[in-house]
Amino acid sequence: MPLEKSDVLEALKKVEDPELHKSLVELGMIKDLEINGDAVRVTVALTFAGCPLKSKIRQDVEEALRSIQGVGHVEVVMTSMTSEERARLFGQAPTEMEGIKEVKKIVAIASGKGGVGKSTVSVNLAVALAKIGASTGILDADFHGPDIPVMLGIEERPIGSKGMLLPLEKYGIKVMSTATLAGEGVPIVWRGPLVNKAIKEFLGKVKWGKLDFLVIDLPPGTGDAVITITKSIPLDGVIVVTTPQKVAISDVRRAMGLFKGQGIPIWGIVENMSYLKLPGDDKGKMDIFGSGGGEKLAKAFKVDLLAQIPLDPQIRIGGDNGRPVAIERNEVSEPFYEMAEKIKEKFI
Image 1 (tube, rainbow, N blue to C red):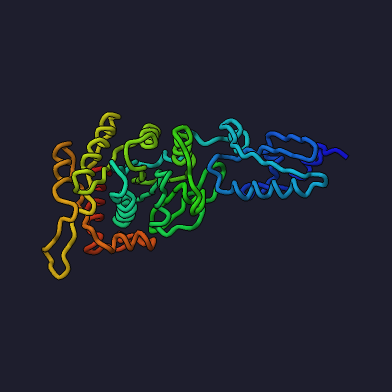
Image 2 (cartoon, helix red, strand yellow):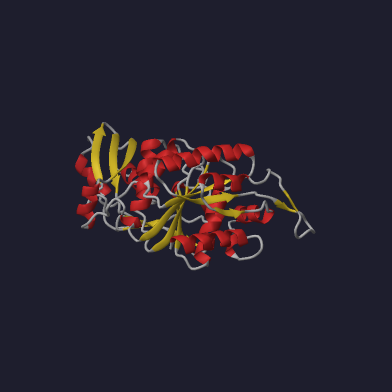
């Protein structure tokens, strides 16, 4: 007896959206249904592309289809609803930038090259801002190397609510990252158009709420991903991270030229791994990567040198263990707090 569409739809009526607790058929999420012999192909339209329950929905649909007598092959294609479809489902669709409508300042943390500690600065600055009373969120926009969840010790995944994602919270800051959606170790291979769409969803369809600062950790360098993201985000400013050595300074000059060319204000420069304090000597230090590079850049571009952060094992250990040093204010974390106070005083 040949398979009938009515039999397949009847089986799919038993599959519910885990968040809305209604049948996928009732919600209009089943878009295409094709039967070819014993093969069934179904297209499911998620409420939004970054839905964290995507894998669960796919699994439930596949199980429902395989339970039908006579089905030998199953293919489930995942897509997402249009804004008009979401509007019909929820009554009113979130506007493109709905999620950030109550965010006062959006600042990107950038670097001319990888390996200078950009994500370390992003995390500790966000934590320090929260500790001194500024409501803060952090968006991990480094799609090819999303390390923020590791540095904050986050393993949970965000949940959705009425077409919006709810950010995770840790150490007083709100957090969103592609890594929390994709899962640990899952490669994220996105190019310009997908990055553009994803960043707009992370801004517009994440319920950030009222924030003084949203810190965005950009990918390193000046490539396609950085250009795409900076054009997609309504940035209030950018902070550039460098190390003292000549190669890093040269790369940072190109990055700053990129931001200035796009009319994005540069809030200042952070010189990371600035020096190594010598054990047993309160004033002694060693310039492992040279000295003065950050200060020269700041003078050349007429911007503030926001901080000179020492090369300290505790900073690295904190990031590896998911407990940033800025959780507590002490000698090691003080440069992050001084930077946070400068930014809060000047921009809020």
